Image (tube, rainbow, N blue to C red; front, side, top):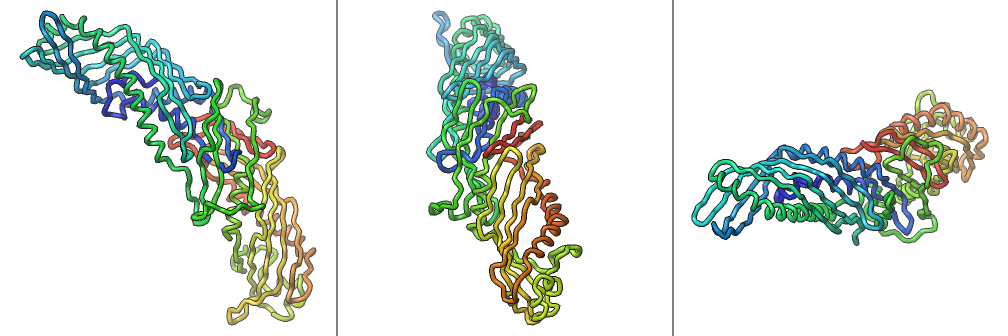
Length: 499
């Protein structure tokens, strides 16, 4: 794919086969996140994804060829009549590259294979030569036809759960090379050209594979410094390291990603009975009917409910699911205002003891929220406590009552290009009095009013923010094309092409 100029760019990595290999590897590690033996996220790259990488690599290669490339090629040829001819080719300029037949395939349990056949290249180069005591310089045009390359790149995971690559093997050869010298004693070198061509062709074939191996080595060095986690805020970060080596068959490559949220500065946590554990996920052999398409998608991405539950666990244990609400934070039309006059409808003694005083509400999760994925919808269970305070004129906060408020919600995911959003609906709400310092609270009446208020204000407010979505992890410069989404038991499945 990108091998033809590789042998001519020893010290110029931008002009080598690196971009093509890099694109292929980014496709193979497109979604990196998982703890334990099961992944939080699982990705499958199909052969169409490799074809996309091949075409993208060729486009990048063509744009990189429009410049000079350092080569520093040296060699010598001994003639029985003239003595030893030593030559140097410091740089080249590539004018034409034709790759008529190239393929990229999966190699089972190994990695990726690049095959190039019937390629041709035309370039010009400066040269210097010394024959005995005679020194000379000029330029040369080179045409190399029927160029073939076969190279295999292994893909695995290193000890720090980062992807790693290596060169498994390489073979390159060309049966047709033509030289034409200009300037200097070019008439003499053109006479010697048939003798030089065989030696030069062999050297270029060797240099081609050497440069491919150097490109893979540079990529391997870069991957050693790849980030495997990202801090999202002051509370949480996400671990997107690999769980193990990709499972590669002749048809696709499967990648297990950790996808686990963890507390900033406290990655090592004690085992907890409430901590979510990733469950096995099997990507379907055939797409669900909801995702049926005329062709196989490039990427299948399964995001398990473990990812959301690990986020809930992290924010809950970090104490981030707490908020103080005052009367000025509620919409004016909200049917339940935080004042003793309004709340006194549910607790008559409250208004009697504290007539027309402002109130504050402290909302907090008393248990970790739970989310489950089912074919009909995403189901969520919220377990909260609401402690009400009366604010006295001297700013003292006096406890009034404590309630448990639990809610059941359902959601539908929405995916637009590179962002994942959704909508939510309230399916159930229950209110229970825990303690009260102002007499009994009419919880059933309060529960009905809260349901109405959330239906009128809370759910639309949440949906407005959910529809904006969050960005999905994709390599820089790539976006999802025609993504489709379906819900399965335990995970959400995204099928998409790339552009």
